[in-house]
Length: 147
Image 1 (cartoon, helix red, strand yellow):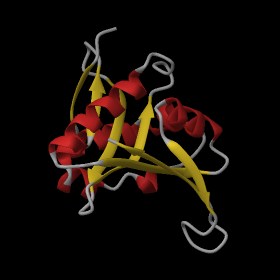
Image 2 (cartoon, rainbow, N blue to C red; image 1 turned 60 degrees about the vertical axis):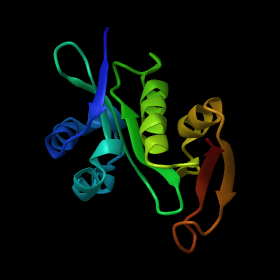
Image 3 (cartoon, rainbow, N blue to C red; image 1 turned 90 degrees about the vertical axis):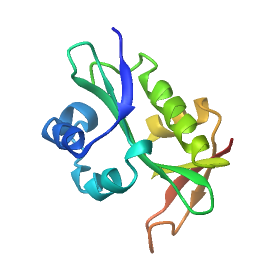
């Protein structure tokens, strides 16, 4: 399967949301798919399409004023997992973030998301738990990696 990674548009994320369970299973993360992020940070929000132009994976990210490339969401469709697509999306994001002056990468996940922790560690991220990251009683695993 040949995949092409390109900047995402609002209609791409709307398509992802229409097929949400293929990316996230039973977890409802639709509320995290902020279309404003795609509107404002389109060059660092990415989709991967196959030959039929079907979206197989996506990444929503941006570069912060302190030069951090922050990955808000990354997902691959259930029938594309294990193909290296997540790694390819991160690589494309890293290139786009570097072009905007990023010197480090950052992402977060829930402390129970073992798959995300393993994936980010395989990409060379350091992981630490911050107990109150998202408010009282809301710990998160914070990933960071220098570029």
